[in-house]
Length: 207
Image (tube, rainbow, N blue to C red):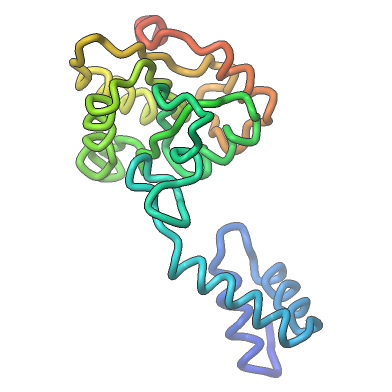
């Protein structure tokens, strides 16, 4: 692409750094902003900057939050004794959109993947174990992507659990295809997977 303005080119290059945004889409977004009122563009940039500067991570579940605790953990109407373990914040958003789950979450920040250099110590697994012990959790639901890395993570955490009384461990039903990703699953599939969750022992032994 040839640009008559270095300012325009720099803006396009920055937008193109975003995932899923190519140079043509970036140019379209930048040209759209050029058509907007200066105050609107200023507000847009201010919101993005403030989000990056002020956003926090929940000290309990590691989800995004405006304060020390996220709105989900702070909601007394939710079943605090049930924890749904997910890989990322995007998975929390995907499950919440089904409106079928009324427990809490725990964001691992990834899954165990030796080939990618990701081990248990790089995830929030220890924080999860401490939370289960401290809060007397009744059920742990694994909602990880159905692939080798997700299964390895489930197996590792399950082996680490040694609480008395024992915690009920389940995993979402495999309405989601093996190798698929939660964020791309439709809401109905996710909802049915949550409703038809299975004991994790049955799933692991069946593999």
